[in-house]
Image (cartoon, rainbow, N blue to C red; front, side):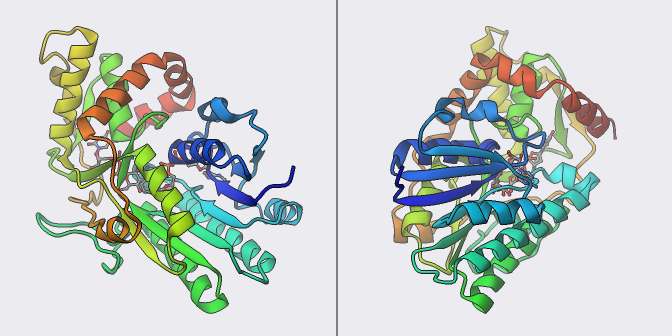
Length: 351
Ligand code: NAD
Ligand code: DAU
């Protein structure tokens, strides 16, 4: 088949990546979407069942740290664009095992940049797009927002690795004229999120009648965005964003962790037919995360004004849909929480 464009998506079997792959395969039937993923504990091909047999989709199991495999891949396909999401993504795991984060997030990104630099002698209409995080900007006090020109101040091994990869991407743009874009997004939520992250962890633990662990006093604040809105923003930036630019993406939707967990408990009690207040009784305050960032909040006016982006899903409606998805997808949840998950969970929450 003759495709209009060949797009490489890395980390497409993960949470955000699978939403993006599904969207791009369905929306752009004339593009070939090649998804490469190492399938770590966080990668799951069951997330992509809906599109796995589509003629414009291919999956290849590749570790972005493996230069020889990447070189073969880039010899086989002449990519027009790369949307790079593959990463170790969980802050707590970066605190207990930082090296894996440096290897995948920094060295893996460097390997991809080098392949593009080799392949794109003529960089017209090409694009290396790095999907990054608001955590590179550090932590906010009670007021203020992260803007695109906020100085970097990463404070966890995870955010330090993402900040390093952002810097490398910009350095390749500046030094080698590589056509690059970066976006820094706030906390995502929705279906297919691995239940180590706050929202699916709380939903799963309520289902299992397990304690709901709240770090510290539960007063830390995150700015939540519906994952499909993030995928929409990525599509917009990939197609209409300016080369060399950075875009912040956020939901204007700040929640204190404890208030969010209360809301999840109340929705779950209603859906499960529990006595009101039952799930709140499972809340357990545990030792705080080391170096826990207090508040993240995004100023998304650039993407809104320049590209017309607007979050489409109201938070409470999004949480209802997310909870329904986890209640309806028992098998998915059982699969991802068997084996290694139990070891991770008991070790992490015993500390
Ligand atoms: P995730 O952990 O759910 O998925 C990561 C994917 O990358 C998995 O499929 C995993 O198998 C794959 N992967 C890991 N190491 C790899 C390697 N060496 N080679 C190839 N594939 C590898 O993560 P996510 O939450 O979907 O995040 C995706 C990207 O978006 C990350 O770069 C993350 O930093 C960024 N981000 C996430 C959020 C969020 O709220 N989750 C917010 C902003 C930015
Ligand atoms: O801001 C974007 C980032 O959001 C992404 O770059 C990361 O990949 C993603 O994991 C997420 O990071 P957070 O650390 O903010 O997400 P997490 O779901 O781990 O935690 C959200 C908040 O909830 C945070 O303040 C820590 C707290 N928390 C988390 C867990 C897992 C708890 O209180 N208890 C828990 O058990």
